[in-house]
Length: 342
Ligand SMILES: Cc1ncc(COP(=O)(O)O)c(C=O)c1O
Image (cartoon, rainbow, N blue to C red):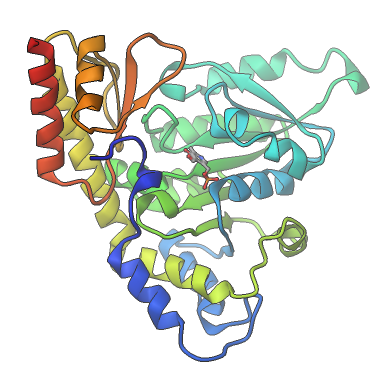
């Protein structure tokens, strides 16, 4: 049973069916196919504004490419200390931007506030050309610790960024999980809240491998940068087919809501396990908990895969996927209860 990561889940049948449907005859390559041609309009409808959509194959590519579009080589990107762009992308953002500096901020739940950003910006500027230029801000939605920014929190952050002449990026590797929780329009927490570019994730929530860079302002060089990054796929139709199926008929939100629901059940159940503490309100599909060592060992011993989170003693992360079942969650809770008693 797997609660280690939503990355370890299978692709959804709807996505596989869409790939199979796209596998029909010859079509033009490198994004000149009919499915890719529809994406700007489909995502435009979803976001209630004109957008440019660039499909890529990984979240890292989406983030690094996005940041390269809004931050020059001599720029600085403000992000959270726990941000994936900061810790887990092997300096792809620095590489794609041509050397920009990431400036980490603090805050609980891997969220930072508009005030934290303002204070960090105020710390800059004393060294003139010796220091990088504050150029961009990146927020993760939902965050690496499973928290969700409210639209007004994003709007406050982007207002500070805008006042300082900076552009804004959202890492939406788990954007669906955030929207399923917020229940708002995708626009409300992105461009209407001041976001310029979104990494729209699909892979963790049922796609095989597909993410989209969604530009809320046109960027002339975006296509060439993607090509230079090696993400202008010759058989782009298969990427685009995943994205089309993912947003069609609200599939992405149904899948995300299912994952979130199981995470909430899991958190509730773990709260009742002696010695266990769920660390923060579960707002998306990830549960962080401190568990007695015997419980962690007991879960693993019963074949339940989880992530021992580095840096905090006895902390684990359990991630629910769109296909996590009631009985999977029930099995974890009863295994944890058993292990706590032995
Ligand atoms: C918040 C966040 N952003 C981006 C990524 C990057 O996705 P990928 O592994 O597809 O590069 C991940 C992957 O775990 C993630 O958790």
